[in-house]
Each structure stands twice: as C-alpha cells, then as structure tokens.
Amino acid sequence: MTIAGSIILIMLGAILTWAVEFDLAGIDINVVGVILMLGGLVGLAFGIYRIRVARRATPTIVEEPIEVYEERRRYGEPPL
Image (cartoon, rainbow, N blue to C red; front, side, top):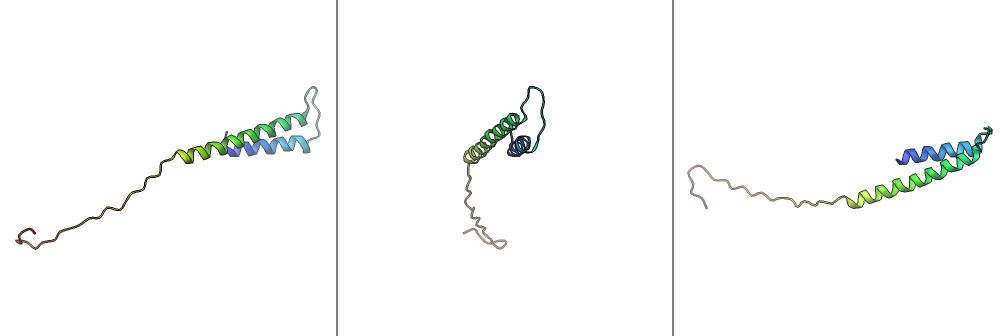
C-alpha cells in the first residue's frame, strides 16, 4: 500500500465516521469508518518504514576524480 493510498483510506474513514448519517441494516457506518482509518494508519506506518529501509539499503558510491596526465611531444623528439 502506498502512502497516498493510506491517506485516502484515512480520509474516507473520517468521512464515514463523522460526516455520514446513513443507516444500513446490520452495518454500522461509524465502525466501518474507524476500521478504514485504522487500516490507513497501519498502511501509512508500513509505507514510511519501507521507504526508510530502502534508503538505508542503497549503497553510496563515492568516486574519486581520475587524474589524467597527457604527455605532449613534438614530432621527432625522443621520449623522456
């Protein structure tokens, strides 16, 4: 679950819990909203944990600059 999906679940659960006044036979909308919010919070925590682990696992490669020496001679000169 992505972080955006978790935030959407939290928002949907909050809407069902506090903004909707609708009754279905055998289903409590407020409980469904709370369950969605808790699922969104768990998904958000897992997504943040997964990002932190991925950042730690990425190796850092430090390349040192390569020094290039070029020898220039005129045509016919002997090497040094």
